[in-house]
Amino acid sequence: MLKHRSIIALNVAIFFFMFGVGMIVPLLPQKIIALTGSLQSVGYLASAFAVSFVLLQFPMGRLSDRFGFRRFLLAGYLTCSASGLFYCFSDTPEMIFFGRMLQGIGEAPLWALAPALVSILYPRSKGKVIGLYNASIHLGLTAGSAAGILVSPYWVNNESFLLFALSGLVGVLLIFVAVKNPDRKVSVTEGAVDKVAFMALVKNSSTFAVFGGIILYGAGYGIFLTVLPGFLIQDVGFSHRDIGWFFMLFYVAISLSQAIIGPLSDRYGSGKTMVLGLMAVFMGVGMFPGKGAWEIYSWLFAASFGLGGFCVSALAWLNNCVGDSLKGTVSGTFYLLWGIGFFLAPPLLGSFGKVLKTATGFSLLALCYLVQAVLLGVVLYRRNHGAKNSNTIA
Image (cartoon, rainbow, N blue to C red):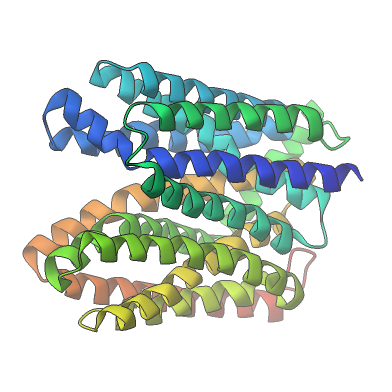
């Protein structure tokens, strides 16, 4: 009963919080431009969030394995709520940038630690429960984005920022009332053993192959949110309304894939679904340039579905490779690598587009996913059919 209550609270909390995020994301660039009069300063919003979000992932995951997940989840929601107040009452750009850093600190445990916790509560259906949690994230973003469009003519001040702050407090309440840590504590001696086990995992060739896929997943996610919309506007002729549809379909595809692929990874093996996810991204990214609008939507939907499918499969794969005392560590490692790809790939692709055609860059990106899929498939096949051990993943 406890585990059911915990997973319901985790999913409801993250849905409402991401609903708030979806409402404020379009407003922050407008507010920073109003305060600075500079379009260039908008780019620093992502950087302010990225620094704290990425750097905290591994140490936070390690600490949560030692001291429990609950206190970090509570602190995360509370910190995000405080960032909403900074957005609401800011009258300088520095206050907004500080709020973004706070939001990065707060969101770090919400993305990484909850999947680790539910994988402990449901050891035989990790993919399913992780997929449902990640689907709740993107469904919340989808609903919040739609709600933001609907209320934009009426909420002209700071109402959305106050709602965002309130969504963080709702998360605090739900986690405090309904979520408990598993009955387990890690001793100092066991922690030393865990460090050895984690280093052995990292040095494994199959783990390196999965890590490469995670960086590419982060790269694709970042490109879909930044460079790709710009390409669709400038080179394809999409309107802002068309881009709105693109973002809506992107979030829907990610949500569906998490809910569908998660249970399939439990049944058929997370290694297989990781490879299938990468192949879907390869086909979608490779086929979309130069087509009509709805054909572009279809191929990008397939690519988005593949990104989400790889995400939930990779998280399940990593959690299957370690014991309960390392769940937070591997989940933090996942989002550390995701963050590297997310924040490095878009500027690299953008720079490439200045030298050659951006469409050529997307073709090369698709090729990277194909190579990664083949490499991952070969490495996991050799692992499963060569060294038979307790960590083998089908």
